[in-house]
Length: 135
Image (cartoon, rainbow, N blue to C red; front, side, top):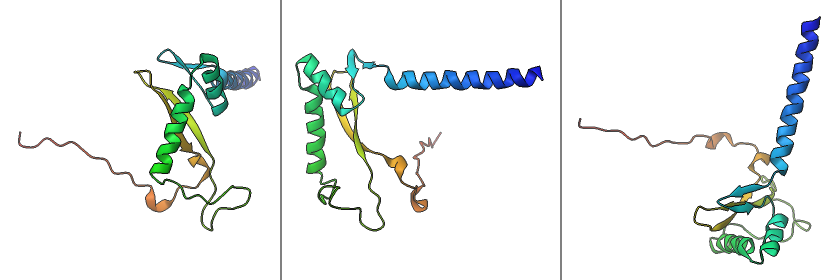
């Protein structure tokens, strides 16, 4: 009986430790190449205000301009007045931030791909192999 109680207590302890690690990972500030990296848009704007610069706002604007330039999306109006076409699902977008080794601030728009099912016909990913011949 003592072994069961100890095993149960150790499982609970491990679960609590893992939850604390996850909570810490989500809330601890991230620094890269000497710069604090924001986790969301609000933090990015706060960092710009604190540092008296527009690095993160400029990075976001550059990414937005590139999306429009490449005609990535089809504008169907505001989400409150429209719904996704049949056969499609609405996915949220958000920015992911990074600081490159040369100090450039990067902001990338990414989609919540975990919200959609994986299509069965497009799961193959080819790999190029380097083959040495003539030896």
